[in-house]
Image 1 (cartoon, rainbow, N blue to C red):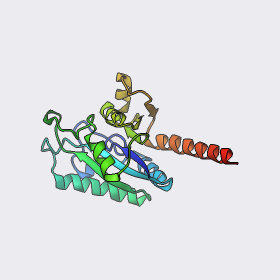
Image 2 (image 1 turned 60 degrees about the vertical axis):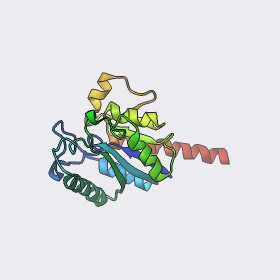
Image 3 (image 1 turned 30 degrees about the vertical axis):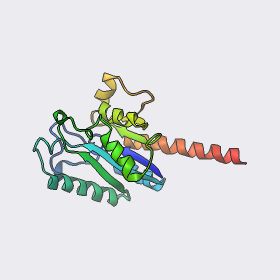
Image 4 (image 1 turned 180 degrees about the vertical axis):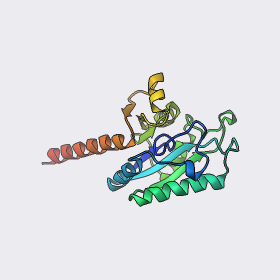
Length: 191
C-alpha cells in the first residue's frame, strides 16, 4: 500500500494564527485538493495528521471540528480527491500527551490502523513539529512553504533529508515525476 501523510492547516488549507474555528474559515490552498486527487490517481492513500488544540482551548467543539472536516472531504470529492482518514490531537501543549506533534503518537496510530511500517512514507507539513514527528518514525520529511512553512525554513534545524517545496501541488509534481523516473528505470533493468 502506498500511503502519504499530510498536515492539514497550512498544507491543505490556509492557516490562521487565530485557529480555523468554523467551516467558513476552512479555505483550501489553490491546487491542494487537485494535488490530492493526483496522489489518489497514482495509487496513494492520503491520510491527514493534525494538531487541533482549539478543542482543548475551548475555541470550538467536536461537532464543529467534524463539520470542518466534512467540508474538507466534500471539497476534495468535488475535484475527484479522497482523503482516507483524519487523525487529530485535541490536546493543548501543556497536557503533555503522546499524540500532539512533534511527538509521534498520531503517526504510530496511523501505522497500527493501516498495518504499515512508516519507514519511507512521505510526510508533508509546514511546521518543524510536523517534520519531526514523521522523521522520528522513519518518514521522509517534506516542508511546504505555505502556511508557516517560510518561517519554519528561516528558523532552520530541519530534520536531515527534508525536501522543500513551494506548496503541496509542487511536492506532488516532484513525487510523481520521481516515481515515473523510477518506473522507467525498473523497466529498463527488466529488459
